[in-house]
Picture 1 (cartoon, rainbow, N blue to C red):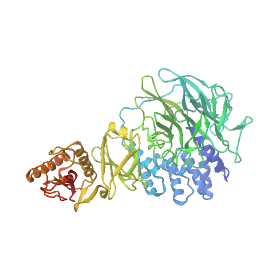
Picture 2: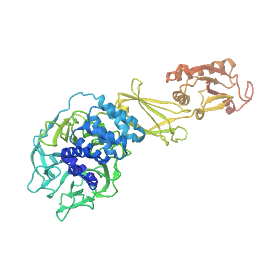
Picture 3: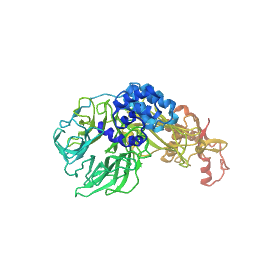
Picture 4: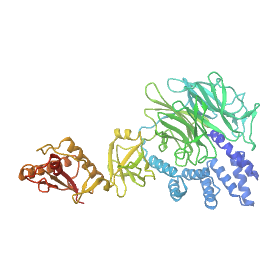
Length: 635
């Protein structure tokens, strides 16, 4: 990870370098961390260090792997002062995690809930849960690429039948990059053989030479264009801003040889370009002022490679107080790398699904096998002809040949622990207005609550849990109905692909006062003449009764059926009772619990509501007024 970190931290560190005041500071800003530690300790014997110097010392311990000492100092400054940045806050939690003090990290997070973003807290809780319960299953085998060098090799990118990648391998045309002691970065290419290994690695001649940094390439098939980063230069020499900083710009080169800078700022560095052929978005990493921590992921809209918008930050669901780099999209999922504190190592690879509305699911750590206790980053993936998946990434894990090495992995399925994400809106069934503060819960097949959230002011909600074999979605709000629906795995795939609407009803919207009774509000319906069997019209209205009880399980109902006066009293009494019984049977067969039906009564013609009594002449529509069924709400 040597070059990755030096490039990432070189720019922000130089900002602080303008205020260096001691020999220890000189050593620190010159990346000589071991010597800086010794010098800071000498200075501490004479005078107390400033809080800024304490943080420099903590960073020195952190960068040399002395995480116990680093965490002590970070905690000391965090307790006594407010100068700690969110980026150093991440380092503090990383240090605690590396000391196997995960529970202390969780306790610290709980104590800072009001100060931290809800996305960060949810991401942390979710990934801790996944990694603690990770099913190791079949071991994922990663292989060190045979042609790795003793220097840093990283940032793989697909190109034709091989891989482009970045390396600090020594070249005559390249000078030494002082902070690393190795060559300035260059772009290399190697063909991929039938076993997925790199062969015939050499400097990539298609991109013009530079004596300074040239790295992290990406090739767009759609545009026939290379995107890559390079040092800012002027007249063949490094170009610096007014504060003495040299940053990294991003350029694009077409197959025809046309080159132009597309992202260039003397004070801001850009890293790891990725062009999404489908959306024509150009993704990259950078450290702008709106960063959530260190380096964040952004995208810009393009038209045939021409930038058409200001950079858009991917937001706190993806970006964290740490560094996020190396975006790559495959089959609707965003893969990227982050050194956020809740990972397995310094930098881990994560996957987040891209939702139709442009938002992202919780980034999921790819788990042990691909990730390790070291730094793992720059993951790319493609499908082989045999339908297996080939993945490549860089790591500085033990057993490698250099600082960072390229690794390959063959997978039968996409990596990463599977999750179920549901987003949507809770609305009033009557007017479709959003309902705020409605409670939404996800339950597993055993009825255990997996996740519980409350809808926003507009009724919006979002939940995400580890994948289940069955999910029940429930929603409630005081004064409203209950919503509860269960889904199998196949149905779960469908409902999370688009916005999910939950409709809740107010009881007063479902009932009406009639004949001095509270009854369910139903459409007018009639049985066939002289029949007690439910016709489709009656069934449709009774389905509304089933739905109402499902939404309000506490309802107790009485079924009352009446006829007109035509026919004998005894005949009408029996006919109405048969109809009430038939309605009850239908309701029970369609899922309405027996406890919800208090009584089913047939009153015949005993309660005529107009003057159409026995022997009176009435038009048919007046007789019809007496033929009715009431579903009375008893309680």
